[in-house]
Image (tube, rainbow, N blue to C red; front, side, top):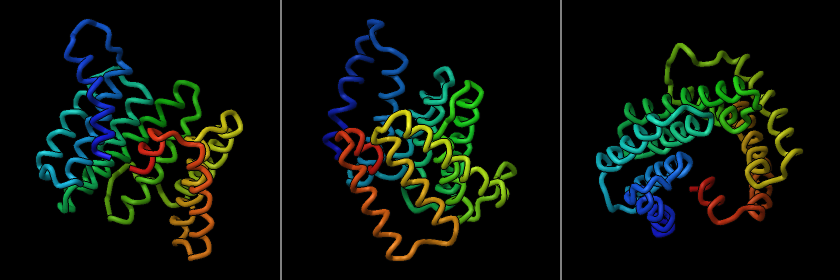
Length: 219
């Protein structure tokens, strides 16, 4: 996995270093996203320490946040914070990163709605991070009440089904399953039979994915 990530990020680094104006903002955001993922994977492989991984992630997050704000970039910032929350054993720091991921996904969803888009991806991830923050006893003034969380979860179902009807891609297929998993977890958990059903659905969705797509979702 580390080798694949290096393969992804090296062309971006080379283009960025060339300073010839050929690199687009889209290229920049993807480079910073790769840098975050690379830092996480480097830590997981034991090739760097927690502080070094966090430093590299913070640099990429700051660079992303400096770009003009869009739904996609806010979602990438949120994803970076989510990955950051899984680095190391400092519970307080991890909770802080996870709460920031929740906030950024919410901002991304609101940005999508402002632009007339349905925002299925940031909505689903906002709710997922919201649930995990509850499990970890994160407190914040903008946390959803239980009833509103359920209403948003119902909305996510409608939004994601509409996305899948428009485009039967891997991304949309797997988000439908993610939403089912989230609903089950928020209701108290899943039993062995339900788990196997979900595993089967994920296995079916994987057949639609390219290697890059699969890496992005599962790693």
